[in-house]
Amino acid sequence: MKKLMIYGATGYTGRMAAERARIAGTPVVLAGRSEVPLVKLAAELGVEYRVFALDGAAAINRALSEISVILNCAGPFMRTADPLMRASIRNGIHYLDTAAELDSYRLAERLDDEAKAAGVMLMPGGGGSVAMLGSLAGRAVARVKQPRKIRIALHVAGGLSRGSAISATENLTAQTLGRVEGKLVGRAAGNIKSFDFGKGPVDCFQVTLPDLITIWQATVVPDIETFVHVTGDRFPQGDLSLLPDGPSEAERLANRYQAVVEVTDADGEVTRARLDTVNGYTFTAVAAAEAGRRVLAGEVRAGFQTPAGLFGNGFAETIADTNIVDI
Image (cartoon, rainbow, N blue to C red):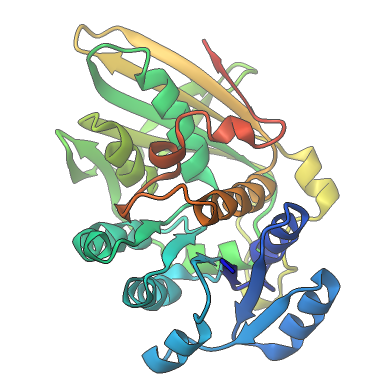
């Protein structure tokens, strides 16, 4: 039987993704490094579990027996993506993750030829902002005859999960990147642009998002800039390991995410679209579980792929309470 393994299943996002996959009837195997929480969650969901670390290829290979797709929810991904992507290629298993870290996407680019040769798909960012923004950008680009530039902004609302805070701290970079004529280049820090998420223009800061890679991968538009507007709690301080797992259900319900894209054509005309969806953590878990289900069912293309590129620009809107409108 084909099975979906969720590695990092007892983490904040992993647990929600596992619950969604189980509800959808997807054959699931939970996995991670710590046995006690895995035993508890596996009993609650009535599914199999496997315990293994990522410091030995042989142990990983054994743990992947009878697995067809792996969804990696264990951050920081700078530590987990490399061993699991390489293990996936060795074992002929399709790889997905929920990474928001640029390095995971660069790694998938580097391993693209190996993955294609093995008939394996690598899809970092199966859920999260990559699925949101990829669908939004793809829809707008499809309306433009000669797209030359994409500016896209994400409105992040509410608090961070413990895992996200730790990953963000370990992956801080002083360099702001943009894509110019198809290449990633450094940009001046502090660039601000106004975007309207539906309640009037607000200032957004240019940041380095993995969408600089994934939107390029799916659209081949040569110039891309990514921005973020943040409302809600400030970045947590002190010992991040003491933070709660993540926002409560009530907090997620109270903090929806939005995004806006501007696509400029060869004549300087601008086409815009706006996305409104559930909280980012909810979206990530649901979208990642849905991506895993679809890949397990055979929606696959070998090599480095993106959600919008593989599933189409409508993928984000298959997630409940997600809407994209042309503006």
